[in-house]
Image (tube, rainbow, N blue to C red; front, side, top):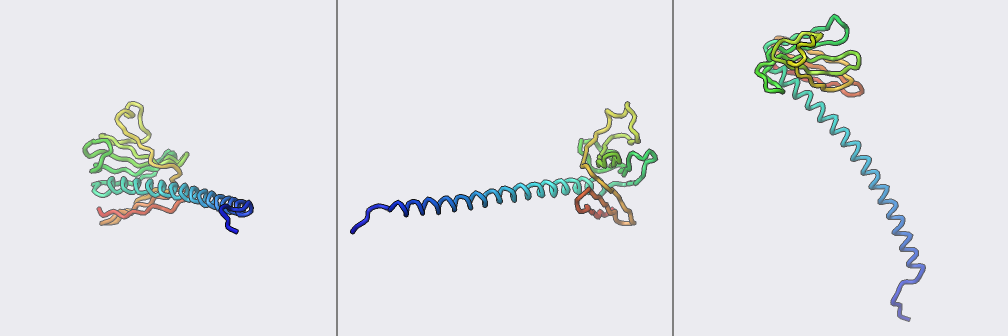
Length: 167
């Protein structure tokens, strides 16, 4: 006897197999989506770290004077760069201050044509550019030797950023 069509059982088995394959594919696609989100978040963190390191390197590589001071007000710690060769706002040899507000551990970069004194007086606010670099900064230290500067930045729940710069 010659058959020209599928039987009902063959058709039901093929539909069941197709359904099982579909379920497994959706699970695999969902897992890929989760991995994509995870790696996208990691890439964002790494990109942010690279931006911070690049900005620090540009500020501190050729700076003629760098001083690290703890403030007496207990509100912030500062790192002052006098006459940086790099400006984010097109100014020539700006004064740059990196500081951490201790209340929320926010790392901030200030840039101005004139020396920056903290706390900032209201009449000096319009001359200063401020950039919030990152939150949750636990430590920001610069160590000087005769030929090198070592920059150590530690953010909460992240590995520290360590940068060595030749003076």
